[in-house]
Length: 256
Image (cartoon, rainbow, N blue to C red; front, side, top):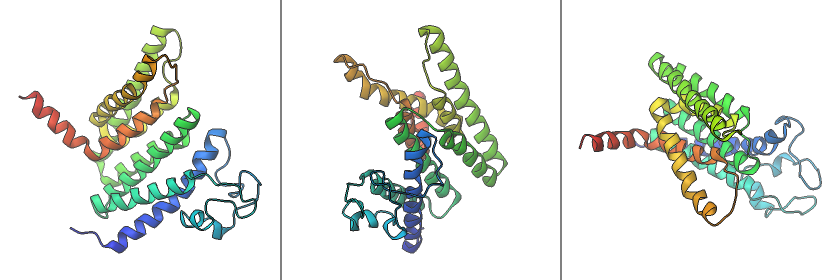
């Protein structure tokens, strides 16, 4: 069934608006600032951003990436995040059709993007993303029905339990913290969206992606801190969209 282009546009516009709010969360949550007050303002001159200068993507383009008041550059992160989230929402509706699954996919992707960017910048995964996302995932499962809710609960418990065990075992083995609490809570959230099998696939995929990126750096002697949440977020997104196909392919492979 082909989705009405008007619905795709509405989804994209809504996504860009949500992306604008996500930018606020990415900037403020890691430093324990309110995402409600004060209103958006230029980080350089401190002047409040007028409503007509706060239109997602469009305002940045019209202002040529500069503050109207002080003319200092505005980070390209703002329009990029807005655009990516807008495309994410439109893409989810196009791929799944106007459905609860599309809403789940778009919300999950938005949360994962927020986690990836905050973890990459600050090595922090705010509870607002992980615990709040867990609540959203469970609520969507409740709406979907009892079987979906049970699957989400088992997935959340699996994600939390596995990462908690890994953190405990790593601390015992290396005599120091091996994994942050943010990663553990994040995997509970991921499990609520992808189930227990998706949790296993996400952990495997995140570990593989992290190894492919950071092993070459370690081999040349660079000691870098690994923001594991970035790779878990990427693997979780892949798992949500393609996880069932990957699991079916692997099961068929094992059966010869």
